Length: 204
Ligand SMILES: C[S@@+](CC[C@H](N)C(=O)[O-])C[C@H]1O[C@@H](n2cnc3c(N)ncnc32)[C@H](O)[C@@H]1O
Image (tube, rainbow, N blue to C red; front, side, top):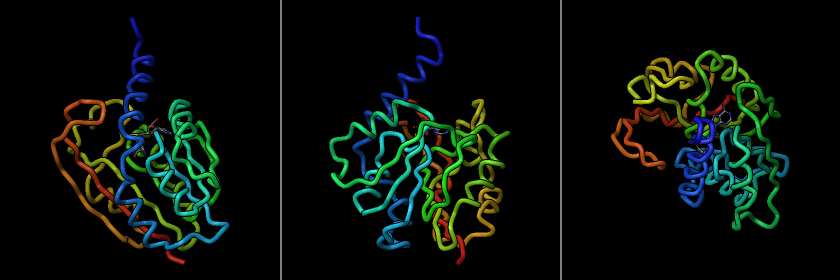
């Protein structure tokens, strides 16, 4: 019988297979529009890149990307994509965002991944994330609200609207949208989603 970690690995493989080809997230597209075409030395970091639906879009638009994920299978799935641009400037790293140090970046994208940071590690991780944004740089991604049905799962960080908003106190908010909806996850689990979709920019 498979143990919990084997099941989780299989679950992520299913997730990557079902989502890798999907369109990039609207939060990423908004940030890319706000930032405009990248200068040659600009860097984007994709935290929890999964199968690479966002990473590939950044590469297509000429960004240099560092894609980070805790799962080797996510990086394998990204690296194995047939639609990677021939001239892609892509670096990858297997690591957890609580413990990984990444270079300062013009764009830090993290779609549906940061809530998977354990609560005890979230604040220091968040501080480092903000510090890594260059002046004028953007954050794009999601945080989970306190009514999300994953709130009682171990290792998941949720927060109220006020707490989520306060995380961006020192940034200019480009988009802050709250969503509550009942749906099924890409892995087939019914779920109540309570999300904050955020794009925010560090002042110059
Ligand atoms: C729900 S998936 C989202 C993947 C992709 N960003 C997307 O939008 O489709 C979350 C991803 O975050 C990764 N992840 C979860 N916890 C992580 C952590 N602490 N550090 C780095 N990656 C993590 C998972 O392995 C998974 O690939």
